[in-house]
Length: 368
Image 1 (cartoon, rainbow, N blue to C red):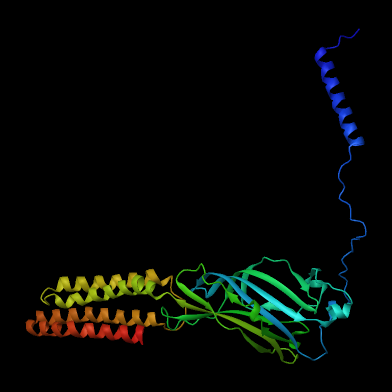
Image 2 (image 1 turned 120 degrees about the vertical axis):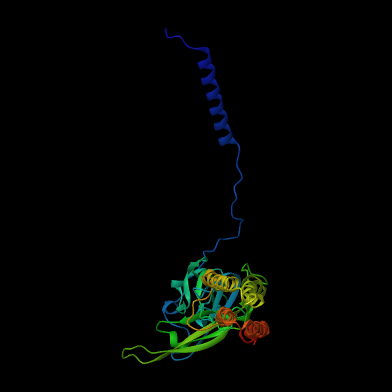
């Protein structure tokens, strides 16, 4: 005889009882069934389209196909003066009409269908000035009952733009977003601005700039290669953002400290020319301070080959400071030759002439 433990018997009995109860519920208690109501049938979605609508451009050969472009600015994150780039968050919308996909032509509606961009004909478009970034939306197309094909894409990344810094730091820049056609149908496409999908948010996250969206401009660009192929006109559309620099920042944090350095050199004309040491010490200290300050802000300035307003201001201010140093040396030499009264008279005139010269530099380089 094999002894049987009482606890084991109780455990097995409980498991058997649960099993019998589960079988009873499964067999005798009906569960709700979500069946299709009588008389209704589920129709399969028919998204088939003719092959010609997949590979050939709509419209007669040689005619122009209008493609509407919408451009909505979600955010401008940064403008890089040094690299002449900007970072943006943009949604652009493309719409064109393909009569072959209309409900009348197909004899059915494909409004509920979602097509991959490779499954329908679509214009080949490139973002000309896109540097780097990512596209956040699926590359799909939708078609309405009239055959209007619509594609949307959201782009977040960096774009290049040819900036003009002649008026820096009081400049107003134009940030371009350029789209152009390419491929075999490029010459037969014309862009139109779709105002229904064009706009921007009221405020952007960028600091130091006031950015506003201007009108889009649809043009064409003539491309000629070095080979034997004839020149061709390609459709192009430019959406332009106006970016005005924040002036108070540069006035108080860049220009004002520089003005104080220049005025520090003016103090040399109030020292008796007999005291050569203090005059030369103050003048050289001003020169070194100006040079150091110029290098410290140089990394934040745009790297261009031409003079900006700020470059002209710094250049002529530097000349003025060196002129003060030269005047201090000259008046000290005159004073040491026993002509102290003449030296004082020169310094007296220089107190006024220096301020007039500095005021002219400010007016002609920064204001006019």
